[in-house]
Image (cartoon, rainbow, N blue to C red; front, side, top):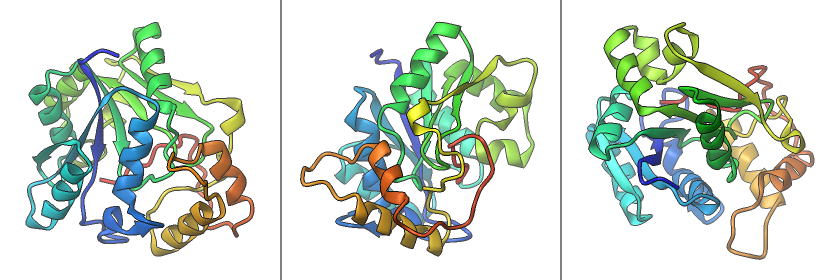
Length: 242
């Protein structure tokens, strides 16, 4: 993989619905650790945690460094700005956007969306049809830099890619995720206390005797044994937490 492509994992403690969720425990490790382990498992891409400059996020930065990944820090509400900082600091050409409240993120997704981005010469690619909280996005650094210049709308800056996805000046593409992972009705993100409890039970049900992360297909199967939570009807498995 190119040294100019990297996974940027946004994380912060100040969630309005579930403060501190990125360092909440699932099994023997924090949600953030699950995300980092899974994102590194099937790709050779650098992982960069993008957190805020607030004191409350010192713990996020500490945990990220303990896990052996790079850290950038920027504005709390301008997450797009944090991604631009990472893109510039590491001279990136392509960014895989992931969020640190998705401990079941698909391990193979970064390679798939990056391959689509390159093959189609798009500026943004996301997979649809997967469980909510399991997908990632690929976006060119150039598109992020242009978006930062073009939009001042708070929502666009808090959620990074909506402007790129909807504005006609960008070439954005949605593709179907693997058919074996098509479960758009399933929620595997951690946004609320109920989400956290359910995901803990899913991981417990899907326990593997090895130290390797459990494949998403196995987590989907395990989720069938755990009572469903709140349904989310969005097609994409990408979560927009800041």
